[in-house]
Length: 109
Ligand code: 5GP
Ligand code: ZN
Picture (cartoon, helix red, strand yellow):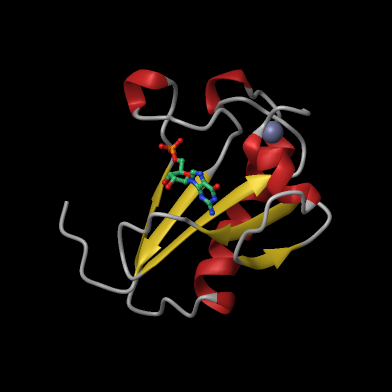
């Protein structure tokens, strides 16, 4: 989607701190980190919000990649938090589906 910030990051039109990429997903550092480690994992296809997605295979792939990135790439052995903000009321600001991975410190609820 041409006017989507995260599609532009995937395309390399906007610089990002890329930490992982494969055929299906792209992962990069959040520009305003809320924890010592704060990474966003996004599908390469433009999906505005979780509420718009019924693709079980894609959602499954995303969660498996989140696990791989947290455990193997970021080495968050002590644990981490996974967040998806959905629509404005859920705090979503960028309308390209993304999963936050937060870690690197103790995260009480
Ligand atoms: P949301 O509130 O939509 O769940 O999260 C959007 C996230 O994207 C925010 O945590 C925000 O800091 C991050 N963000 C917004 N613009 C950029 C950008 O240009 N580059 C990067 N790396 N992160 C961004
Ligand atoms: Zn997009």
